[in-house]
Length: 267
Image 1 (cartoon, rainbow, N blue to C red):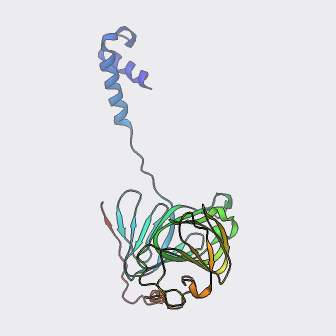
Image 2 (tube, helix red, strand yellow):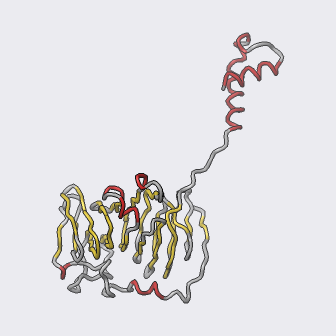
Image 3 (tube, rainbow, N blue to C red):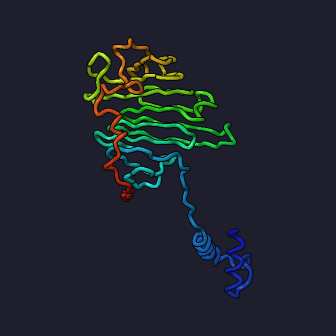
């Protein structure tokens, strides 16, 4: 391609072939490179839509792959690659394209690392999320039902959670869970807490692996600390929360003051 451009430029100069003009070769090569560069158009990469905000109480933002930050509203799309953040006292419920449902609790950051769903090609399904801070409750959709644990996972600072056909919850505490209580009314210590309502999850880190079934609570203190099953009174209710932790998730049922809007903040 570069040689073709060089020949055109040389012919246009009326001074013979490129091979007969060694002195002008460096100049022509630089000019040809500029011509080629000017014809190249950058094609932006667009993330796949993963789901929609179906309920919102408070503030939800999305830091996008293009570097912008958007304040989301009900019916806003969320995309693969988004880093989602809820504000204080804020809840957001997301509906994914595979039918799955996820509720982000207050002061939560969750990234949609890689989400792919094709109704006709289950072998291509992926649902990889990352909990940076805070807590969430999720009900898996088709990706979590028709594929193995390796296709639907939540990474956290202390462990990776493999999910299948499950209603489950997770809360990561790092000196920021003063507003939460376990089932005995005590403030949780730092670490990752999980609970399961239906189905099963498998929590794995360098310390080991543990399966959790309906009604069970778990705790993972660190990356090298094996996951353990907690006695029910020491568990922190997330998917099983009936209003112990404030504000309760039931605030999502009141949407009377919710306005639909979305704005983009360049950053």
